[in-house]
Image 1 (tube, rainbow, N blue to C red):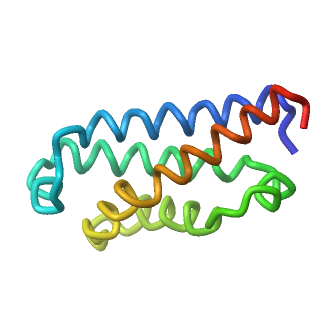
Image 2 (cartoon, one colour; image 1 turned 90 degrees about the vertical axis):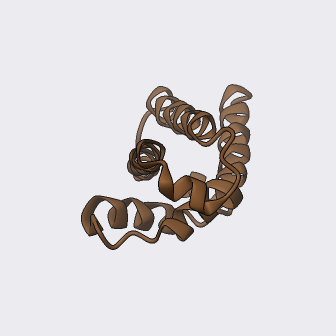
Length: 118
């Protein structure tokens, strides 16, 4: 299990990657716009891959305390890392628009609770 300091670093990295994604897609409102912008698309994939890698270091007790589809996050990372041409842009867009806000909120709560010693 990572030390509290190490756990904090992984969580902060996840927040940084989420913020990067938010910046990448700012002004993009539709799936077709997202798909057409290859630079943004690939930048988002890389950031999601980094998030999935960081999740691997979140201890199970923390995952259990904060219900979220942690395994799906890691699974998405594996798909991005190994499927190259089989990635469905609509799924990635859905993750960006509908799943990342929840992840951002939960990671923020975990960080607050770490600060409070919970």
